[in-house]
Image 1 (cartoon, rainbow, N blue to C red):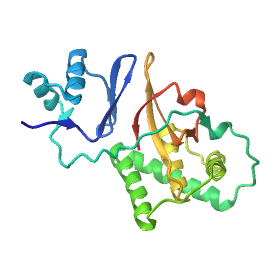
Image 2: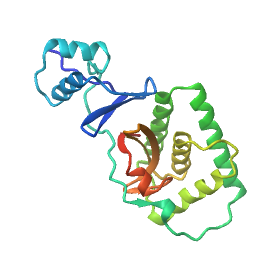
Image 3: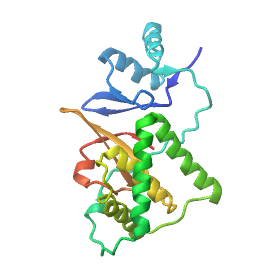
Length: 225
């Protein structure tokens, strides 16, 4: 008997005893009817479920046949307890090269968001990280001070880029900026309910780099890239 798995570009989290799904392939959030949700949870936990319930989940492409062995290496993240934005650091004058670099990264990321899918954008970001790791064996060791300084440079230079700030655009752009300095950061997608709110931020360990602790912790992580 085929054992189905959750589709790779689909993730979910539990908020207020309900599941919320993020489909990066279709760039949308959604919820399932309650009984269908319960059937999915039971099935993913290894329980036997009625055939019609599983067939419905397969028809809706919630569950799919596994295309490759499960590796169990999905990234995880610690709860946010600190913010680089709220840390006091001595500031220095921005270099022209840094301003130009941030401008270029933000502009290119914005263009990709307009002409490509969210899935392709995130897959590209993950591929850049793999290339960095494959080329050096590991990403650079870095201190919290160096991390905070690099994030602060991006945030200050971003103020001079005449493109509207958005959490997805700026989180992906900051992650690319840090990766160029061989600093490995994650883009964390989170959601809140009542009212619904979707948000994302950049995080390393328990430090959020482009948001406050208070805002980040009001959103439950649903996908980590």
